[in-house]
Length: 77
Image 1: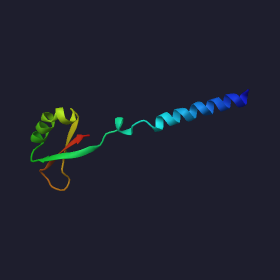
Image 2: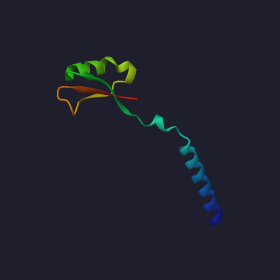
Image 3: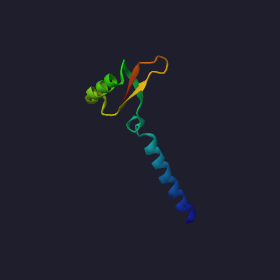
Image 4: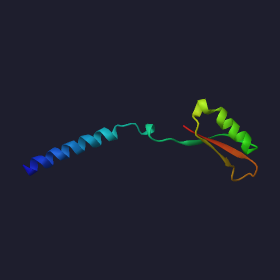
């Protein structure tokens, strides 16, 4: 009886693992990429808000690390 229960449990666990392994991974993950560069933080945020229909309302404006005074607009894909 214990052997049958163990075998049934192993079968259910294997089927559950098979279902999870075939699920699309892109549905739960996203990637940030640089969309454009701007001279001010305000213009970066304005472009981010204007492009909301294309990439959604979530974006970020970060200072470009190697050139002061340049802002990068990062959007999700």
